[in-house]
Length: 466
Image: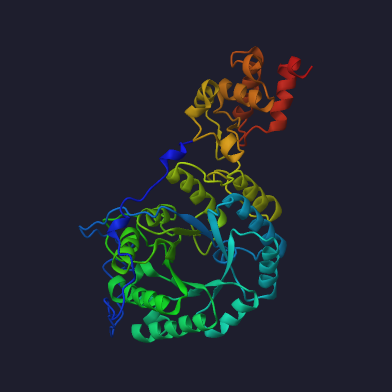
């Protein structure tokens, strides 16, 4: 693990304006008669086009970054509803994972059903500072009553921002929709909320300079005037976002985040990225958002979320440690407990090769790999998974394992260390290998079970069990 004096700093902060824009709008809304659907990038009848505009922006990360959780909000839109007990148990594990500094900073909850509110209240009773419990509501003033009833100081509000939503769903103009949103924002301030998050839905298909920036600028002015903190969630709702600074807007995550910072002076802690995995960039994009100025990356445990899912929270915690050079108090062994709870208690199938969580993410079957692991496990293990995640490197025996794999399996599972370890040239190992070979010659297709391996070891190496 990297030393703490390698902590990540942000030397570019002096480039950014210190205050939000004041007075008259510097970036007026561009109202249009017809929607801008960016057909050059989103033809619909073809795969979306990746375009580069010949411009780039520099790295500009915040000194403090964190993750926020949407397991109980977006995650509930992709699986059977959690029970109250499930929510409380998982929330407790989020607290353990995030550690005393709150690297898992917030968790957002639905507020609509009696069961939602019961789960929220039971989590509140735990008395944890982190993750802070926040809400999520529609852009409807009446919904603030729900927020007040459960005593929350912050909630998220859906503020869809692309012309796909403005023209095709709301059937209104940009100016009309933004005015509707501002009425809701004003209602939030009147309700006495300390902070709200505006979820800029479908931002990676929105007119960045014509709609996104003018609306964000207006929000920052309102925040300054009202004293209510307003956060902007950069929502890559359809997974169109690209992690490259050279990519063209509206798909470039670095450009969107960087320009919100430099054009409007929005503080790092008022920017948050939320992504989806439709194009397999659900990890690259939030990391890019971090590197170009977002403080928060919004995630869901195991990536469970609408359609292809959200950024996996446990993966962003590991990436946080990689960027910072240390865990900053996080307990990454909670990842193992989270995976086990989802599988055993909630019946959620975790793919065996799923990173950090799957039952075989660090299990090797190849004999040549096992031979290397016998000499030094660093050769074929990503890091000390036993110490950091509570998941030691493993071996599964198949027809590809060879004598090295069988020897490694026995040494690990029998707890044999140092001079007590069995060499792959041991006659007993040769006998087990011959039996394994016969199994697959008879067209076996499954791995050798632990029970079978122990039985073979008793037959061929009885002295180990004397």
